[in-house]
Image 1 (cartoon, rainbow, N blue to C red):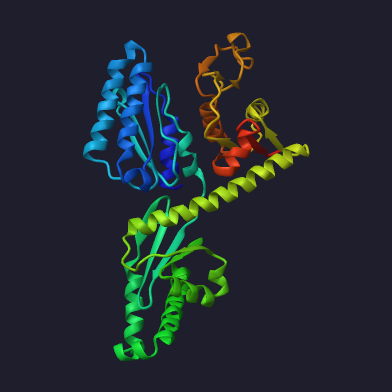
Image 2: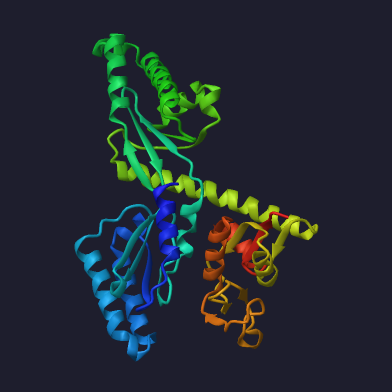
Length: 373
């Protein structure tokens, strides 16, 4: 299991007994980081929490706010596109999770951590290889879960190839176009060998337009099937720039896949197949352990009821007692959070749908599911 998944399960399982937990989720994409907008957003959310939280909880809340403020002002370095921070001082609980997607800014002070922004980390993630090249050099990066690693050994191999090729400066000037083709072919040869030793799922290529065109034209079929996009960049571009541009491509691909998944689910449900649409039917399917893949949007946030004894979920109080075990039901501010935790226990997949797919799903209540049977 990946580290990201372990961390999500650990956060989801945390149920403080001594105090509430403060959850802060921020968009820290380059657009927000450039002017440090997330600092303003953070302080605004904390001011709102101070106004909403009951008097008896404010002293503990202030301590949590002070700890998170200290982290952002003294230790925080933006990484990825989003960050989720969780703190519960009385129970020595502290977690920081960097996200590869742009989340909605929000803050919650509640009995359990707010985990909806973390569900993306539960997916099986593709490993991206990002090849950056110009007319004479090449660099290779791996991107996975909003982290980027440069493989220096690849650049060294390309330099070695050039020395073995015997191209002098005069040769380069006289045979410029021939040299570019030769360089691209040598880079492709090394990339194929490298992929055999260090497999990757998807390929992104960056560089000057002329080199990109030559590269795509010469791409062999086994690598062509993995190519998902290109972008222009200088060979000296810092890893952070390569990471953010790769994440933008990744996000666009994910939005397309989510829209297709929503269409598939809605069509299946309309035909009476193994799918549900809407809150009540989906909750019922969850209680029957039939959900294979849950689809939710960022906006759906219904109140509801949960049985702390057996895990029953409902949208109505049903007389205040659980219809399954008879224990008192507990009111929850966000029933979807309880549903996500139920999905983790049932080992079902959870998809947080954004973009056009999210807009389409919102028109049907913001929730649907593909069923096992």
